[in-house]
Image 1: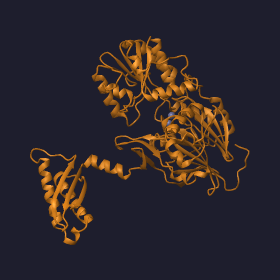
Image 2: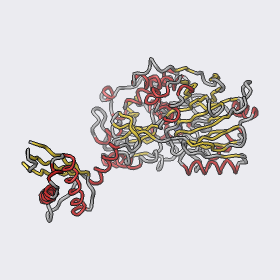
Image 3: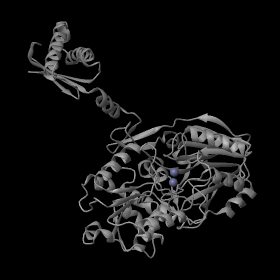
Image 4: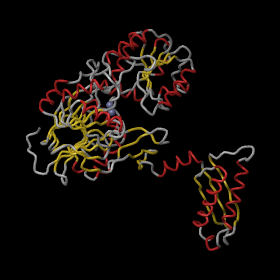
Length: 562
Ligand SMILES: [Zn+2]
Ligand SMILES: [Zn+2]
């Protein structure tokens, strides 16, 4: 605790605005003070990604509306680590929050790059905090705790307030030999437990997995053996942010007499971020993809982005045969040193099928166990963390509902006296009194659609989905000065089928007749108004389309006057 004494009416609250209905989009708030005058800190501000249900939308942000209204009371935004689901929304939402940013050096390096791309680097102040550093933000005293995960510098945050200490774990696992960075700081967590932890807000990703996630050092052995035994060209894909894995693959390649070529923008950017904090030492230099062409196939390893089947990433282009410099073919090998993120199954499978068709042998986690380990805690690790920290209150986060509820039950089994699993927007009062949900504030998603931030399921996306399923009809009708048909109606369809028995041209003629009938059915006073005519044409065509296709296409009616 800090030495400030709580004033009457002071409360400590936790409010997730993202990350508590899904894995991704982490956006956590802690508030301190009386309900009418709270000071806030934000922990993480991440994105999630669109999928087949959000055509054209790749990036999804948490909706900051609630806290935007209290923006002047935000004392700081603390970023635990540099994964997109923790920092990806900063450049999008910072202009609406305008609070100082805090991060350790590696995270700060990548954050600065993002802010520079968004033209915000001079405006948004980043304070670099050293690993294990402590800093004060109003009534909150924050101490970073070194953990292990699948990226350099993963931090937990001990948040000391006059009403108790919260341990916000961020993403973590217990890796005794993480290869990059220090091992999990068990001592610091145990000392925090001795001091007394009021609440622990904790990663739920692997709550359904027994045992331990496994060590990065084990992967090094397995990949080293595998790569030494490979002939021909070799491509390996992993998350660029997993610098320990990059390091492992690079060393395995160099040990097998291969030079490493980094393929993909984020792979190159991450290698620079890693070198900026002293990682990836003693390896390389790396070949560019044009330089690599001068080497025999078995003298190179391509370390590439695109393990999730992302269509524009390096590996997808290699699978398509459309990469300008890197070609894979018969007798080559491709290693997937990564997991399948739920939602990406289909694009990954499609890409793997294309690679297999080229004659490339595939090595995945499923058929070659040990070439990947998770960065999140399994049940064995969670149990140890609860034993170290001994919180009074368990608050699961970083998961879908089923993860959070299972995690809450798990904590109760470990004799944690209170476990609360809030949804996004549920405000949990941690102190004083028993933990409980005391308020519900608006929380939702915003879609980045063609670079524009739009509401979830906004009109543009709704129309695109509607057209994707139902097709589209457009009709135009030209009227003369006396409201008589001068030409048309002209019909055009998009995405509506015809066949030999009923060709699409014939359908269009029938629809034109329906449109004409609808026009003539209008009283002459209505024919003077473009809006009335257009509405009548739309109604008629919707009805006719349903008769023909049992579909409700989007109908665009236009009246022109000559
Ligand atoms: Zn992470
Ligand atoms: Zn995460």
